Image (cartoon, rainbow, N blue to C red):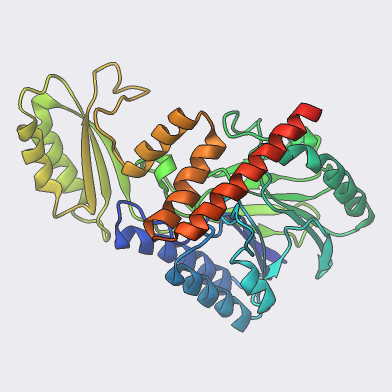
Length: 384
């Protein structure tokens, strides 16, 4: 028996206000589904952040519907939990529930275990830091159920594990129920496969299916896991997807012309126009000279950015004279002003999309609901 473990698809994500980048997410997702069908997997798990925003575009909704329909037509069931990008702070039914109600896919994020073809599957939706303590009882109950089951046991979770990423970590691996044979994780965008001695099986993050604005521009690979559970030990295989190339390249102002020529030669044979970031070192007396060189790449790249960095900054942390991506700069400013990652996420990922579409009533309700959640969290912290 084999299943696909796919996460952080972020359908509907639009980068650089570019339709091509929006379609890149759909193309990567469709690839993952098509490969799963071709390889005759028994089922598919979507481990959260299915959509990029809680109120996705009609196009994103249709892309997911068509993909789930193709799975159904090939007798492949699918199961999903919700990530933070899927959950609205407003009192609204999450959009993915539509697919559950239409029996295109099964929602499993409520923590209730169920058995599918002799496999026990238990899932939990994303919980914010103020809600993490509620996992203790739920995990204990899940562990009891897992111990009773003789076959494979899969835990589906959309949280950061501290031992893997201390900055994005929300829980430790020792907090997880111990008796599962595979831990299907979502939330972290880099692929990771770990075997902890205190857990009953491997813990896997497939990573996001495409680069998002939070990851920057870099040369990397994206994909998902196929997991063979026909034996006693699960055997995860990472499947690479064909995504748009992205390059971040250092160049000295003294030889920028030859550097640009080398880049041009490198990308000529690519089937898809890449995204390029050029980090220029040295003293720039005429910015127009750099722009003239960059313009040579304009027909060969989907997007090409440049920024000036010092020689010291070219290795390690880089200070950007001007924002490379407006989404990142808006998030940085929001976080700096609000002093909170959660509040910045709410402002940029939930409130701003509503206001940009003129949905002022929904935006007002979102602010009210967000304040109520914040107040409840403060009261809970005070009691503790």
